[in-house]
Image 1 (tube, rainbow, N blue to C red):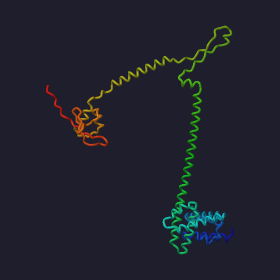
Image 2 (image 1 turned 180 degrees about the horizontal axis):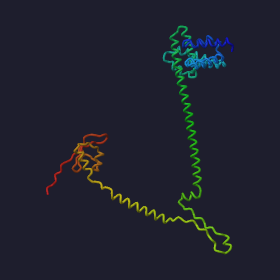
Image 3 (image 1 turned 45 degrees about the horizontal axis):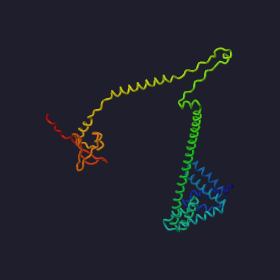
Image 4 (image 1 turned 90 degrees about the vertical axis):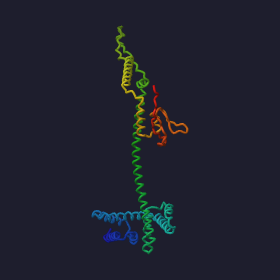
Length: 338
């Protein structure tokens, strides 16, 4: 890169920084001969210097257009496919301009394969050309549509990134769960192997392990003397354990009797006190509450609205939820003379 080329690149970058918003593509088209990898290198260097100086907005702006031009250069490496897609972009834009108002969404939905950043840039480019030609209304329409499409693509990209991240996290959790399951399977297999031993089988069946046979000293047997046997290990005294369990059960039964004798005896007339309070305070009680107090469910005969139980009368006064509501009254009972 010679000094003259570097100066031309710097001049173009300065024009790009100074040009009005929305006219960037028009400016770059006017200097199409300078769009090459060397320009991208200079743009990167200038963007780094601007960031170092604290001008982050200008640095971000340059890096954005550096990426856009890199995309254009990559497409130019395959001219046939690039031209075909550009033509498809233009045809879709023309369809959007000619369609009835309100049908733009349906047209875009029918051309999902073309909804990408390339279409957004083509819309902006055509909008800039329309503005230069004086068709400001059409330019505004395309510019707004391009902005809306760009926002939608950005949201879709962000959603896809989150979904990929969640998928990786879920996969990691799944791997951990699979590892734990494998460990549990290994422990289960080991436990089954232990239970398959004769000792474990006898314990499971409740069969005591047979005492080992006494060992005989063969040397003493051959000499004609009385064979000596090693003492057998002490056997478990089953009867003694049964006696202890029976004693414990008897003690527990006596303890239960003692505790029962110390419990307070319930008052058989406890409900009378509650009914007295209900009558005095003019309480309204439900059918279920009356049944708990007197032991029977209150029911009225045909044509009546009260239920009598001893000296207590229960009068229907409406509903409490799904149950009948009752008012408690007390009748005066005349005792016969002696």
